[in-house]
Structures are given as C-alpha cells and as structure tokens.
Length: 190
Image (cartoon, rainbow, N blue to C red; front, side, top):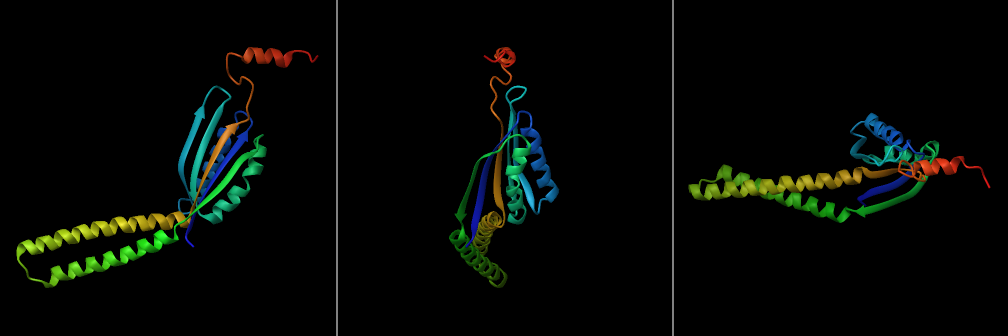
C-alpha cells in the first residue's frame, strides 16, 4: 500500500509561551535538514500583549516525525499547557500511483517511437513538422505526469504535520477590562 499520512495537533501553553515553543519546533525541523524535515508554513498571530498564537506545518520523514509527535505532550506540559486535540488521517494513493506509472510508461514508449520516426523517416516537411509538434506535446505531457508521480511518491515517503499553538484562556488578557480583573484578583476572599 502507498499511504500518505497527515497529522493535526492543537497545543495550549501558558500565556507568552506559544511562540517560543513554536520556534523551538521549527528550529528542530530546520536542524534535521531538508532531506528529513521541511517547514511548509509558519504563522504567528498577536491579539494583544499576552495573546500570541501560531501554526506550524511540517513535512517530514516518519522516522523523524514519530518521536517528534511523541514528545508534544511533555513539551506542551513544560510550557504550562497540554495537547487538546490530536488527529491523524490517511489517503491511499496506491491506485493513483499504479495508474500514473502505467501512463508514464505508455507515454515514454510513444515519445521514443516519435523520436525514432523523426530520425529515420524522410517525409514531406509538413509531416515532419506535425510529428515534431506531436513529440513536443507528448514530452510536455510526460514531464507533467512524471512530476505528478514524483509528488505522490513524496507524499507517501513523508508525512504532513500541522501544530496549532494557543495560549491558555485568560480573563481579559489585554483589554479594557484588565483593571477590573486586577481589582477582582486583589479583592479579599469572602
């Protein structure tokens, strides 16, 4: 089976720790190198002084990604939070890969025949030009199909991981109600 895996996690952290954890994860991927892990997307959002969240998407080899995923809970806890969602999905690309490989073989055979025809045939100029145009079209289709096949094989050889980083909710983190929250926090217990 030729299966492509996708993982999605959402982590909470104490306020102010989400961005630092995301940067550590991104640095770990970069350190592993592009043959092992690539950063696909990295986004951070600030909605006030204490409310910083982010999202990091990686594509990595399973041998690197499995222990990385295994450490997410402990890392979230060390940052004052936890993993609140974790999901995995898969897509079986077996049929598409087999069909695309067959199409590449057929197009390669046609291209080779057209090249041989051009090399060994003496025909009127308009027929030679038509054969050259057909050869160019077949070669373009072959290149495009080979690219699709390589992309599918890459999806099977690596897995996609998206981690969302959210701060633990606070009452009025950085808003007009902050003074009210401070007054409530300092009021004596009744």
